[in-house]
Amino acid sequence: MLRKFSKWIFILSIFAVVGCTSEQEKLLKRVESRVVDAERAVVQLKSHLRNGTMRNAKLLVQYGAYLKRQKPDLAEIIDTLQSEGTVNGLMLNNLQHRFSQAKLDSTTVARKDIIAASNTYNELDSIIEAASPNSFNMMLTDQINVLADMSDGKLSRVESMSKEASLAANKSKDYGAGSQLVGNPNYGSWHRNSNGSSAWTWFAAYAMFNSMNRSPIYYDRWSRNRDYSYYGSVGRHHYISPKQKTSQTQLDKNYKDKFSKQGKKFQSPYAKNKITTAKVSQQRKVARRTASNRRAGFSSNRQGTASSRSASSRTSRSSSRGK
Image 1: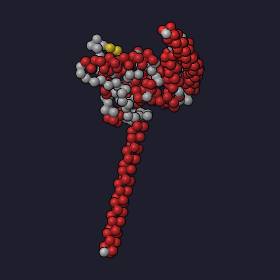
Image 2: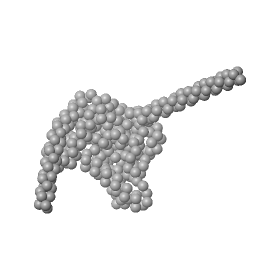
Image 3: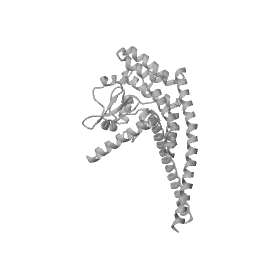
């Protein structure tokens, strides 16, 4: 009896392995197809940037040219920000690096098991979305708005409220020049100090922001008080590598544990999306629609009440006549 039972377990395990292998082979074929799609997306994005067909890339150049005339001493950091609208920008370079790694993974780690294959597929999906002209065009709004803030109000923000309005609406703190780029792993990283706190450290190309902002930006305070950025609210889902995502998750966990020991609660900086112009506009439309519905409902109720009273009056008079 025991031998028969063992035999059936062995047979079922074979079917399970065969089934998993079959599913993994199907997924690997999808991964191979995604590699082709991702490569095409990155090549097309580079073509858009070379040909100058991306609206916000043009605007980034215009903003930079104006600001350099007003503040020539900031030419170095302005040039670096402007480069993001070209094929030499950090965002595009990091995107290409991620694609190269994902392509390599598709022929190595993705073949180990179905989970690794699924992770590689998801990363390729993110790269495709990040390389789409619409997404990349919106990502450039952060750099544009950094230049706008550096212009002391001479240049307007795009796809966002004014600095003052945004800080007020989001109950945020002004972290100075480059605020929209804080937390974006393309421009810096959170460095843990000897006291256990993590402070934002700019990469060398953006180190000038350190001299422009005297106070260090600490992760726990920034988490509570960060303002809107396209990356923070939308782009981080596609413009972050798996390794960077793991690092971000670990940083959040460390702070949650740290705060928990102190009897406090820590909330991730990305737990709640910040308000943008579009959101404010949508909220106003909803508010107006609600108010309109209430007025219509109130009017309808008044008419209904009046009609009811009129009908009641007529009924009362008829009853009187009948008597």
